[in-house]
Each structure stands twice: as C-alpha cells, then as structure tokens.
Image (tube, rainbow, N blue to C red):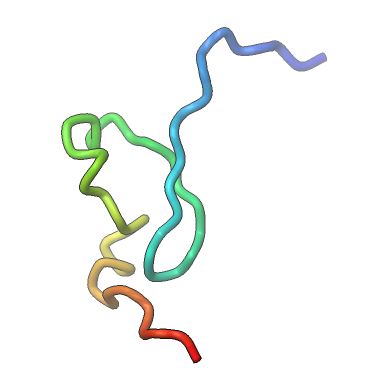
Length: 52
C-alpha cells in the first residue's frame, strides 16, 4: 500500500528548449523565477527556434 505524503507538491516549469517539465530543486530556491532550462545541456542549446 502506498503512503500518502503530507508535503505539498513541488512547483513545476516547462523547459524552453526541450519542452519537458521539471520540478523545483533546493539549489534553485532563491532564483526559481529566473530558471528556464531543465539542464546544462538545454541551456547550452538555447531556446527553440520560432514556429511556422
């Protein structure tokens, strides 16, 4: 049987490069509003190029 967690769910964002969702991390606590990328690799690639 699964135990229920009493913690509220962590906030999520969507990576602007790959489009995958990622969760809040303790190391981003003070800069969460500025975080755009899920990883260093996505940051190096930069945002996706425009649409149609």
